[in-house]
Length: 300
Image (cartoon, rainbow, N blue to C red; front, side, top):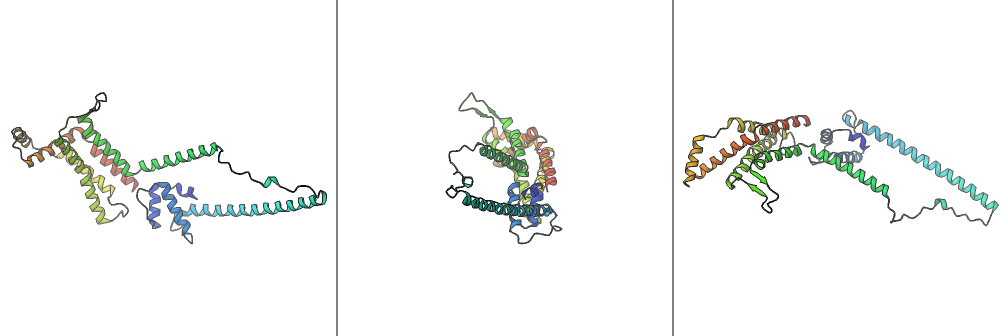
């Protein structure tokens, strides 16, 4: 019966679970979701209407075929048992009439005890094959989700924005094989700027809009709104935000004499982070955001 539900895509299974009012976590993989729906269907007293649930037509067809096969197997086993008993009784009557002192032990019905020292190598190979197939399917289900793809995009952004330009690795100089050209203030500015405009602001906007509309009750952040907001912010930061050169020159002069204010330090950190965004990331945040929007439109 599971094969009739395996042909459905994961988002179709999620929609079917919502129609059946089955509560499940959003990160549930496809095999677990199939098992959950199948368990719910088995617990029902009567089958559902196929016109209302056309996805379950093949499921109930296969269920009827499997029940017919089991009934035929049971009747065949009963007929075989009856014929075997008749043959045994006939053999016993012939034995009693011919040889009264002949042993009537039947060794063909005795099953040998299962040994714990057998290798059972074929079962090991079967288990390994099935486990590899399950792991492969779970990995595919995990990597095909929108959060997994977003995590890959964020890893690429972190590498291009911070690691590649300012970090160098020399494994021959242990234990100091990592060299960084950034100061603590610059590193904090880069992390705060990138985290704010690439994740925090889109997450807050997506959470607020999803909270108002309540279109996706199973998730707290609308992924489509998240990636749209991220794309707009990437367009704004990369193309329309230009820090003032006069304020930067003023900060450099004041900092050399140790008279820079905290507000000027904040403005300098924002300008430095925006400049590195334009130089290192360039159009990649916008490309990643548009790709996320396309994936959300395809999945949702």
